[in-house]
Length: 318
Image: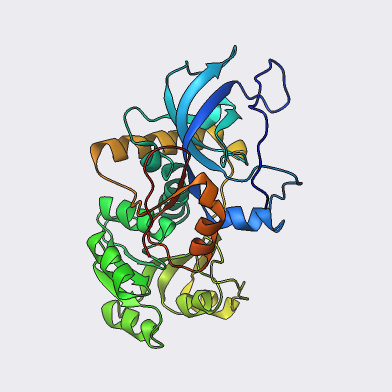
């Protein structure tokens, strides 16, 4: 990956990407998918050269006919690529109004919280009283899922690594927190939920997925959200059969369901504005430290959401 300067994007009526809104980026979210895309291994492959980054927040500085926004409006959104820059030309229908939300907070909503919402409520049909197991609960997705599960009154079992991450998961609302590094973590889950868990959110993959499948209750749902552990596990169908369980891949595309995604994302902004949910931003990197930020995320040293900021104060922990 090369950090370089490129021209500020220009808005043109009738251009293929339909970009009608120029956003001055103040903050961009960093995700595991960014590293996969840079390596050329993402499902929706982007041909190089390209500017990575698919989650941004900032201020509209220019619009053309058809835009839903005006210069000065503050917005956030999920895009295919281009967020790790100072400016980005975006189709306005992909953007959501964020009002007075701080840019680093708003930049954490479009991917992690949208994915968590779709996983829990669209795929998992989570409801009050359900028991949910959330892996990597101190990460961006797990942190978001815990907060959203709490809003509907679910019982939450969380897994996390070191003491700091377990403390974060507990303070975020998990009812029971388990150190996934201990070999008996599945037995600890069973002790807390002897009849099994209704839903499992798994962004880790590997052996965690197979062990999780065995923990499902009758008609339980395993939500596969990624493979942060680096390995894609082959799951045994007999586990699903004997418990009438199901496995759901959680992968969403704005282009496939724009109205539904817009509705979800605007609801998340409203929930955040009311204080019902709030991303945890402990690692805020300047743009010139993007590579270091990616290395921290890869090594699992981060907690909460990692944000790349183009201006303002920066902070790093760990």
